[in-house]
Image 1 (spheres, rainbow, N blue to C red):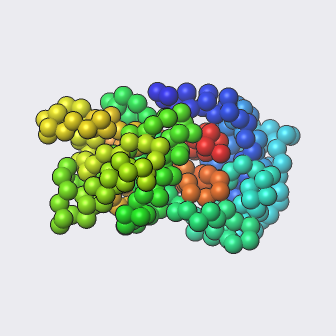
Image 2 (image 1 turned 90 degrees about the vertical axis):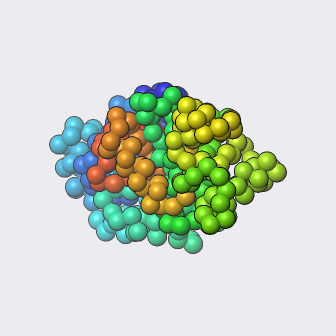
Image 3 (image 1 turned 135 degrees about the vertical axis):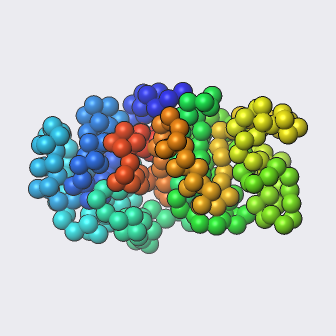
Length: 298
């Protein structure tokens, strides 16, 4: 896939899936849901939240709700738990955060009785189509895990690899990003990178090709890799960038979002179903793209 238009087309082919929205009384969220459900044919929506507000907002954005189920719950915590329960009971395929704090929706996701626990690490995957890069680029983790150790990094990578498979990337090339390209015992992330490459070669990390440590330039630029004498098949051709910490991931995510002419979207992985956890600052288009990614992965 070369852009989000192709992602949307692929989601339509694989859909429609059923989306439950927690605290759906939010204009930006409803615009994205309308685009996905009415205009795109990607999802069927169940809107959980303040029904009066949902209907008033929908009227203002010309969203015809005649074929949309609404569950009237004004309390955002109750709405979050209900939206998650719809997924765990198989009445919906994935859940989206509406006008509710991230901590509240995640608490519902991790609830022992009605939640979506799997025992796996939850992680964030962002997808970018960058003008100067030749293919889709997946960045992880920019939002969930603060300072993952080796075991946690491998779980984050597993989530990203499974995600890449669902997007049609059969053997994703995974670059473990560090500050330099050689293992240095004084730099723990380079040591972790070396171990991950070894585990991939031993068949412990499966379904992908792992390379590293890589600095960012030689992970995404063949010319930079050649200049450094790096000949690994991942060099300059990465599908997945595994970032060392949340700071590094977050900085890269925002740099690509605000300083480059790129399209982006993201989804939370590792639960029994994808979670669309967009920010209020995200555009309606970014929210729509995130819905499409989650629909495909579900």
